[in-house]
Every structure is written in structure tokens, then in C-alpha cells.
Length: 347
Image (tube, rainbow, N blue to C red; front, side, top):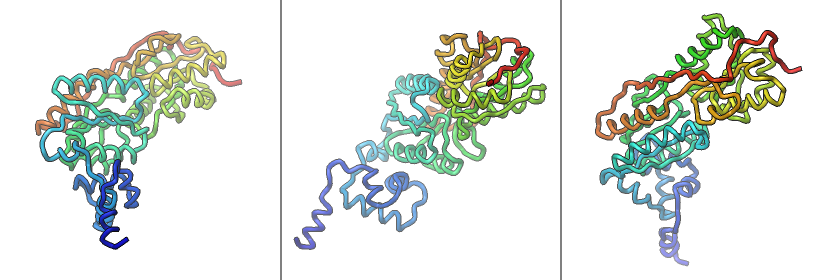
């Protein structure tokens, strides 16, 4: 085969070429390919050249949505969340979707699985296909958020407050709500409480732990036990938690509280007679387990409305960079009671 024939063959578009195929061919990340395609961010000249050679070799063409970026509104909004299976995120997304639909936008959803690098790569990959991005409980580092803030695509953060990042934010005051929850336990005579944490990458977890630390000023001894905010991780963490001999467990969220309750029941520890237990978020499940769960109602509907209002303003070129807070509410049910005289622990 002649050299000219080989060149023509290399330039023949290959059906189904994707951005991941381009990244593999060029030996770079999909985020780097996205930056080259959208001409956003800083890419070293040699890397950009490798990407462009890979694009040519594979015959890759951005989809119609990406090509439409410069032609006006695509009527798409991207939403990225750490866990699609968590009911909390579902309710926020549902409310955002309602607002978007009323304004003539479609919603594209993606999960980062709690991985900061994957979340940033997904954001960069989605950006050419959408008019705006909404990041729920973002784990992206501050430098990555600043990169998104510098881009033309409007981006809104939900439940993530980061200093020095010029992005609109809708959030819940988790710290104040956690202190209110601790005040309730203190009034019941509890003096030693274990906090079953969420992911250390979660801003909500950081804020709730701050509330637990502040509760020490009222005389409540608080201990942190690492977990991941899931049913299984909380179940597995309970043995360590009980080793501190608390009279109450404050779980990062309602799912973690379900896992904690399951382990307590396995051990024959009665809730709330021997151990009080609380959650956070007030997902529907919290009203239907036995005992009904004392928790904090996180206003997901209001949060979704705030997020869409901020996005609407940003799409209109009127971004509001003030943090917009939704108020949480303590919900008292059956899983908390007076501190037990004898502290439950593993035998």
C-alpha cells in the first residue's frame, strides 16, 4: 500500500469513535481531551498536539450538542451527584427537573461515585453538551471549582460552600441544625455521643462534625467514628462506636442510621431504651422504620428551587454569588429518649 493510501486510510472516520477512545489514543485523560475540544483551561502544547492527532486518526467528531455550543442555547442542564441511589439527591434533582422543564430545559444526570477526579472529568465532558451545570454535594477540589468558575458554562453548587470560588451556591445550614440536634440529646440527659461520619470529602459531613464539636461547649462529649454515610458502612462501624460507651448515636444521614439500627437490633440493644439514635435528611424511610427515626428535615424541595433559581439567573447573565441557605428543621420521633442509666456496649 502506498504512503498516500495509508494516509487516506488513517483519515477515514471510524464509526463510533468516542472521547474516551481519543483519550486512550493520545495517552491523556478524558478531561484533557475535553479541555482541548472546548478550548478551556490550560493544556500543554505537546499534549494538545497529541489530542488533535488522535482526533484526526480516529475521525472523531463532537456530537451535535457539542457543535451547538457556539450556536446558542442547547436547552440542556447537566446535574452531577456522588450517588444516584441516595433518596436525598433524588428529591433535589426532581425539584430542579420540575423547574427546568417549566423553563423549557432537559436535564442530563451523571454520577461521580464520590470520586473528585471523576466528577471534574465528567463536568468537563458534559460542559459542551449543556447550557449549565449543577453540582450536588461536589467533591471537586478548590482548584477544579475555580477552573469551572472561569469557564463560560454557568455552574451552580448545591451543598458545598468553598471560599475563594466565584460560583453561586445553594446550601443548608448543617452546622446549626446539628447543634440543635445535640441540644435535644443534651436535654434528655445524654452526655456522651458518637457521631457516625459520612465521607471526609463531603462538605455536609465537615459542617455536621463542626456542629458536634461546638456541642462540646454545652457539656456534651462527642466522638467521631469514621463511616461513609451508607447503610452497610454504618452497620460495620457500630462495633467501634459502641466501644466508646455512648448513650446516643448521631448518624451522618438517615441511611447510616438504618445501618446503625440494624446492628443495634442484632446485638439486642433496645432503641431508645438503651441507646438513642438520630439521623439527618428526613428521607421517607425515616418515618417507616421501627422505631420512627428522630432526624433533621433537610428541605430538599426548597434546595432544588434555590438551585434552579440560581441557574436561571446565571443563564440570564445575572449570577448571584451570595450563598443562599435553606433552613433545616429538627423532627422528633421515637428513636430518642432519656439517657440510659447503664451504658450499652459490646460484651
